[in-house]
Length: 56
Ligand SMILES: [Zn+2]
Image (tube, rainbow, N blue to C red; front, top):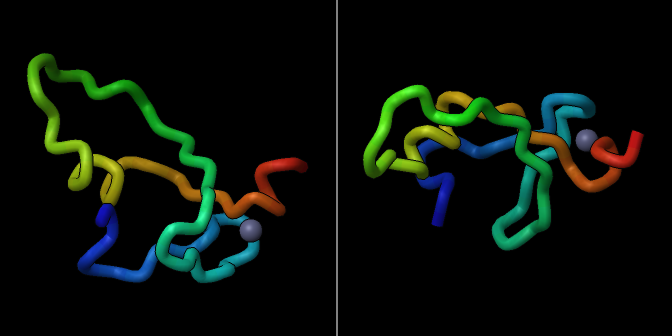
């Protein structure tokens, strides 16, 4: 699973993201080449929105 260390939550409304829930991620393309540890990247470099907030 992506988020083992901390509970992710929606950046807009603060809703906790449940396991297996569909979410939207806003992220920058990794600036370094090669294999990126995407799980770590997602944890640190993305903004998470729940389905509800993503439609605004
Ligand atoms: Zn939300």
